Image (cartoon, rainbow, N blue to C red; front, side):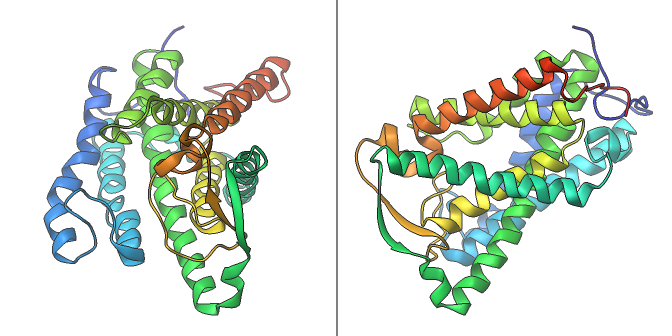
Length: 303
């Protein structure tokens, strides 16, 4: 495979980093703001010394303050160093809002499918239904948290499947770009003593998101999917999302894990379950099959 311009064909008018340098830049774009803000976040009692959010306010701070500097750094880099328009990082295509909302709905549906599968396999026990609907304050908090997850998920898609995927593809090829993006995504979501199945799930998460973005030729849909997946997982079932608890009553069903961590996901939440990995493998295979069938032709340099 040869280098290719994803999403938008115009050449970069500035300097495009070498393929091997792009992962290092990605890590720096994420790590530098965290290190700079860590002490201040702790002083506000929004995070622990380990960087975990404290309460709902801390979670909002993590999702906004933790991700905004990285987004700003990447956008400044794209515009003033690489000299590329935002369309070249996947923010292109017709009806972006409609595409995003469709992806949001798919995100709601797919995480419900995964959680429901774990429940039916005996890994969850229901402890209540729709408890959040009894409290208008809880519903307000859930709505605000969904907005926070929309921002966080959109940032991750812009920087990973938008900027990094397109930058590496222009210097190497699509296969190398997908591999590097997924490896860096795993690295930045890695925790000490994390089970291998959790790392595998993160890797497959990124592969799925890359496949979606490549198939559609933009990142609007996968941005919506990522937001819907995280948002409903955090608020719909009283379960952790990537190991983080929202501490809000469930919008849909209060579920309590029971049984082996390999089935329930353990402290990581359903994303750490082997059933989640099975879902991603099946979803990636479905996207590849649809692409091979030519249901929607994808051209990296033509709309």
